[in-house]
Length: 373
Image 1 (cartoon, helix red, strand yellow):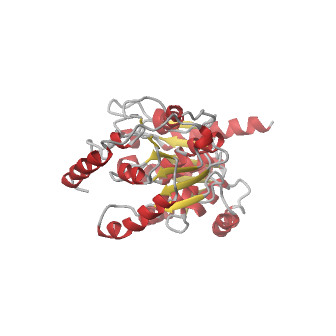
Image 2: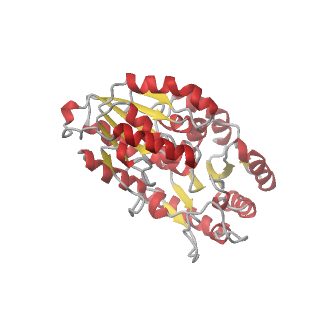
Image 3: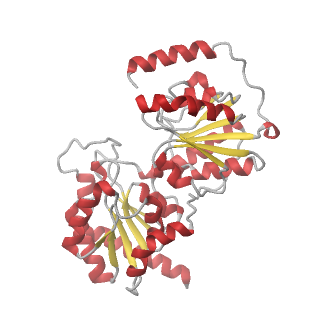
């Protein structure tokens, strides 16, 4: 959406909503149908699952529908807190416009009383939530709200500090929802385990088990570089006896295959769906991962995690589970939260050595062994 179209949309909806009466005080017994909105990636969606659990706990008799992107659907499709789904069309283009009338009809048909935007960066989120007709509308997000006048509880979180999970839970209080635990949730199915079984059975032949290495990320400056990955995989196999598995999506398959070939690891990049990959993570001994979807998947499945952080802030999006470890270097420019690095060396990631990571893997595994004694 261009800035011009965005400005026009603001003018139109400002005029439409100008004379709207304020909503009545929110009462739990009046909430029968709830819409939650999560149209971002799988990691952001999993960070919303504590909030979803708390919404369900506070409104146990309400029907909850989720408006989700394809990525978010993969994280939530089997979540028992949610009763129904509406698929978000994605990027605003000609195809989106053809789907828009059907989407609006579905949203109106839901007769929602409360709409909560948990994570959405799309400029159309405010108007879509408004056209549902829900009297109580709230947005919880890192970003500033694009259409604050379309929300009954316009909560701005862009300047708030703390972990994203805690910000969501804290701000749900604006509409009377009491906060609970911080644990992420992902509910796998038998179909997910069957998909991963072709790799899982093969890998379990090693009595020591296998570990996952996910060196990629949504931004290239979050990647752990190939030479470090190969060296770490070799060390993990030699010193700890684990089979290393390099995980990634289809876009990273060529990179993963090249790394795996050079260090004797197995690559599953591009060979499993998100949920199949989640099952493989569940069956692993530990995951070494950048700040990415697989890190949050591991957290939701309570898999021991070593998280490598560079440009992003672990205080905001890092692991939430006890004993999991963040590995990062004290670089003056980090965390910068930028999409590209202004320095060619990308020091915040390249300075994390294989030995650094191996030491922390051993430390995390020793914690797990002590918990079994």
